[in-house]
Amino acid sequence: MQDSQAAGTKPASRRGFFLGAASAGAAVAAVSVLPKVAEAPAAALAAAPALKPAPENGGGYSLSEHVKRYYKTASA
Image (cartoon, rainbow, N blue to C red):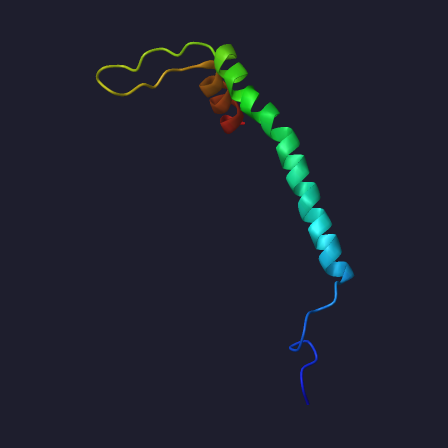
């Protein structure tokens, strides 16, 4: 018995069509969002507060509001 798919070209299938359509749609969505993503980091860097310089002797721990909030939630 011979394999009918081995000889000649394969006819187009609905599965292949929908796979191609989904791939094209994903590519269009990615390209349309890409310019907006490239602008976002520049705006985030401009809005970020200036950080304190790192201590010369290492360490760097400071009791900030974030750390206080963590200790409060961890002890509960």
